[in-house]
Length: 531
Image (tube, rainbow, N blue to C red; front, top):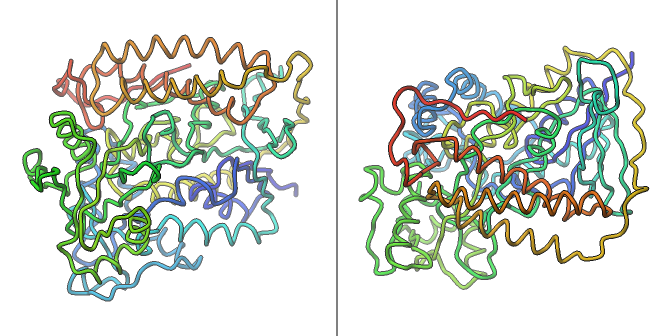
């Protein structure tokens, strides 16, 4: 029997999980635009939310998720993901992921073998972690298995250009994903890769903003490609800003984990005054949207460049054992978190909306799946609960693999036409791409940030239209490059964010509008956009 040929784009926890699960029954081509390990998952610090202690319950995890999601979570999705969490943790343990063991049962619950921490929005300790570098621990272990799997072919330094559909190839209806064009960055050539099924696991789009906790790879590629292929997106206005990114000119995007606040970290003004209790009774343990908005307000009210995060009141040995990587990195930048507070600012962190999928990761286009941060499953609603993101990657990576297993494609992949470069030339002015990139990220930060107004959103929309025209012309006339492809995708995703924000005439979750400061009457509704 001829095996499926499944192409997976993206090599974070979602992509690697899917690759290992799919390889149990199909051949896999794993495409990543950098090294396999380089992506947002590598930098995930906190952990994975899962009910692992006898004092906790699925119902509590569900309710915490729904509460954080501001009335927009899909309960059926939430319940499914929450109940799958312990199974996913068991799978990771079988892969050899070294979660931190429980040496403080009086602190974390006697029923758990592993240390469970608590993060904002959670009513129980339920975040299992590997010290303060959980993403790295999972990513490296899964990468090890993927690299040694005989059915998985890895293509590093290949950036996706666009999806290939039957309709684009002039094939008969119904439309179906037939493969993908990718740019081999090592030789500068575009190649076509046919597939029977294709999974997008490309992450989010926080590089649309000037300040972000994300690595340079988070440019919304999957969302943009799926939109161009005819897929709907939902809730793109909900961009989560992590409250505590280290403020330092050389730190770039170093995150101070929410678990620091979960273990007693306090937010302070420069004069040492705590302020979070003025905004929420949960203080520093309020959900991220509330904390980020409070910090943003205090910074603007006081003309501050940053606020302070202080955990120095905890014992130094406790801090070093719980947060060894954060302690070391802060020390490299001149801060001793065991003795002093550190300066922090909010930064764009997570894309809560994305490509609409069902519970198997299937999109509107037959043969195309989306999982992880690029997908909209209904799990996160108007604000993602801390440490539900890696969990989503695991659950839907397995779900997509199982759906592909039972939906064997009867025909071999199509032969794809070669990429046509006969009417383009080498770019004459690369500065155009660099300038447009800088302009986009700056006005997205200024006009489409934590607090929004209709006027600011309209200004952003007008500028996006101008940029899209310039980029379209550039793309049509010159040979493509990594920077051009990422800019093309980012400007499209930025338009989807702005259009979604303009469509929401209320303030809810991560979307706060000064023109519509209250919740709209009636049940909360998703913002759905169609190509």
